[in-house]
Image (tube, rainbow, N blue to C red; front, side, top):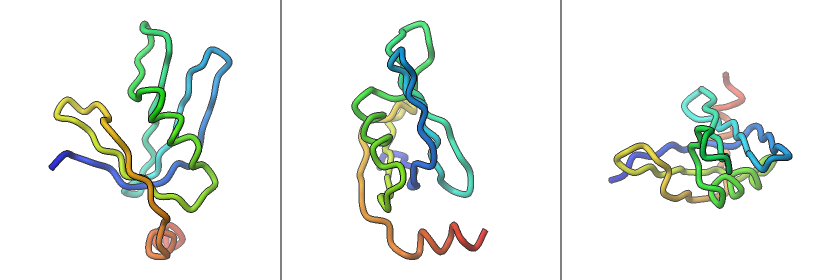
Length: 92
């Protein structure tokens, strides 16, 4: 089974040069992911996956991100968050 992370998008920054930065909340921490069209910048996400993640900001959509053996994201699964995920966030 491929490694994955389950969580929600809590912040998005879109830049005029086309770069996208995404704050992804999972396991009680926030990880920043980035898409960049500039090959000299380190981008961790393909554009289509970054745009999909960005579109879920301020929704009740939970995301599971799947990674290959090298740690690169390969695909995402979207689903409506259940009350248990929301309760976990509120209890912190």
